Image (cartoon, rainbow, N blue to C red):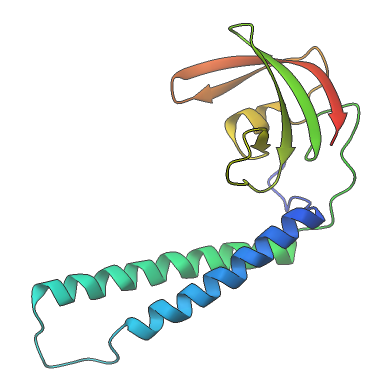
Amino acid sequence: MTGGPRPIGAEGRRALEQELTHLRAERRTVAETLQGGDSDEIGDLADQADELQRADQLHRLDARIEEITLRLRQGTAAEPAPTDVVGVGSTVTVRFADGSEQTVEIGEIAVALDETLVTADSPLGGALLGHRVGDTVSYLTPGGQDTATVVSLGAS
């Protein structure tokens, strides 16, 4: 894949917009809990640690909000999934090195509890992008290098 902005489908855009709404609400809640201004009072260490933890949480929220905002701004509308090569939106059956097969959908956004979804930026999803039926790809897993062969390809 190229380093430029990736296309984003309607479902991916909706999921990102929902996440952004949730993150902004969470940020407001966290920001309201932070003590305002400099204080000459010395609180106990637990209060200070809690304050630092909330400030760190605020920083992480701000970073994710910025990431999603940029993705939404730069993402162009996704074309329909290609039928001759693996792309976002493709349904792909792969055969792993151990002989097992699995059918997965290449998606943009991870969906909780959807075991058939492989995101385009995951090791397997990224390795499959641009390949055709019969191609074997290598990808890195927590257990080391692995391979998968594209058995069939369709659009979801």
